[in-house]
Length: 129
Figure 1 (spheres, rainbow, N blue to C red):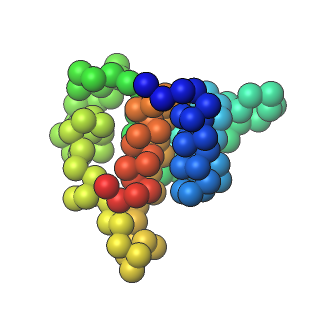
Figure 2 (figure 1 turned 90 degrees about the vertical axis):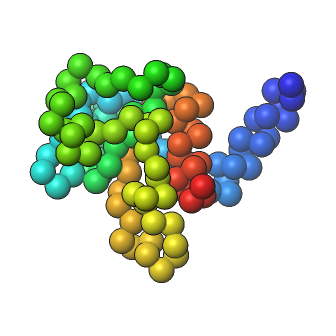
């Protein structure tokens, strides 16, 4: 196993390379609202009086669960329509174009999670893996 300082330097280099510090928000998700055209994500920011609301065409709940399961608030119709999919069941290449020419057409994605699962998914999305 690598030493902690080596791992931390690696993480810092990945954050810098993909500018992850510019797209990361630290906070607690208080509400997720599926809408017709997007998903609304309400975030409570630490130490702030007001939170922030994000809109994304797709949302990834990267909560570290290896068994495909859905939150209690997920409705079966949203799963059937493809509005809600489990992280392990998504083929990102079929959903998210990564070609520079189509970058403007790429759907927005909100990744919700604070662990290594969320970090891996973000890296996969920004690299186009």
